[in-house]
Image 1 (cartoon, rainbow, N blue to C red):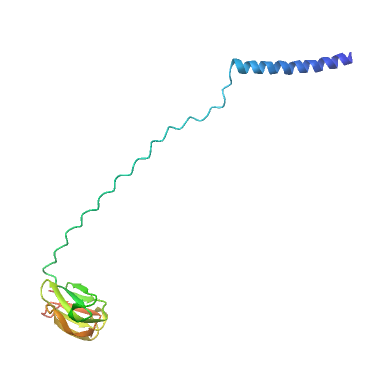
Image 2 (tube, rainbow, N blue to C red):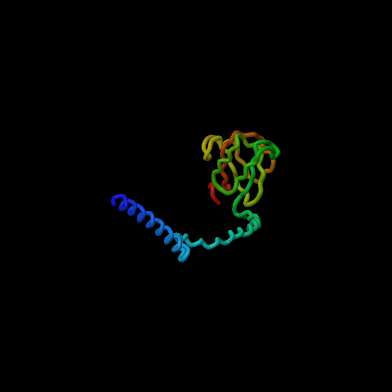
Length: 158
């Protein structure tokens, strides 16, 4: 009997596996198992918006008219208004950045007196003095780094 009972146990185990397999197949066919829920599909992204059309460049403002109360003139490093010009606007001391000055061109504003100095910030020796309404040649060149513009009545301000 021992052999029958071992065979019987073995057969029973085999039948159980077979039955479980059959039941598993029929349960899959009869009621499909829902797979793990996939994440919901993301809504379709809208097409990227077209960039706004480039704004036209603003029109250049009309150049400001010179202030009639402020003297404006240009100074040049060579006679007859030659070389790189430096524009001077207004009363007071101006460091013009030239090594020498040889001519002046009055542009606009009230007439004024000017003094050229050998040093910066209107310090040092006065190298030349004149009214700004002089044109072209000063009789230089004069070594100068700064100029003071004044109203001719003793003060730098009008």
